[in-house]
View 1 (spheres, one colour):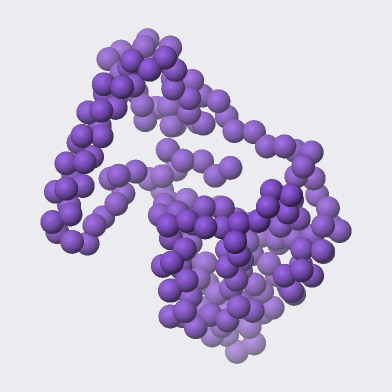
View 2 (cartoon, one colour):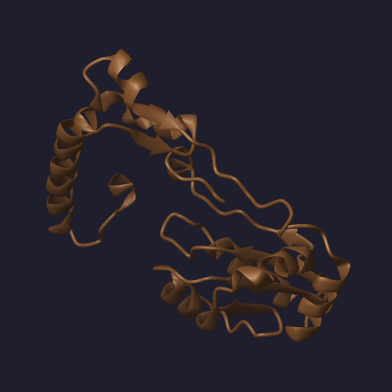
Length: 190
C-alpha cells in the first residue's frame, strides 16, 4: 500500500522509498518468526509469500480466514428500507456507498456522476449517499463544494450504528463497492 502513495513534493519521494525499504526488511524479519499470520483472502496470503524463506514455512504460518456476515441481521426488509428513506428524505433512485472513505477508495467518480446529473435538462430524481468517515472525507467534501453539488443530490452521512446497517442496505437501489486496482489484492470490502 505504501507504493500507492504518490507524494507531490519531490523530496518526499526518497523518504517514502526509504520507509518502504525499511518496512519490507522489517517484514522479512518478523513474518517468518510469527507463530501465525491471518489474512482474509488467498491473494492477501500470496502477498506475504516473498517474506518467507521457503514455501513450506509460508504454508504453515499463513492462514486464510474468510470474513463472515451475520445473514440473520442483514435480512431484507421493505419496511426498514421505507423508514430509512423517510428519515433521510430519499425520493427516487438511491445510490449508496457505506464504509471507509479511505485513500484506496476511488469515490471521486461518484461526485463526478452527481455533477453530470446536475447538468441534465431534466435531471432524474436520484441521490448519492456517502456514509462513513476516513482520510479522504475532507477532499471529497472540498470536491463536492467545488462542484456545487446540492444536498438533494449528494449527502455525506456519519457512520451509522450497526443496527441501522440492514435498513441502509435495503434502502439503496444500488450499493457501490469502491476499491482501486492495486488495493484489491491486499484489501477486501466487507
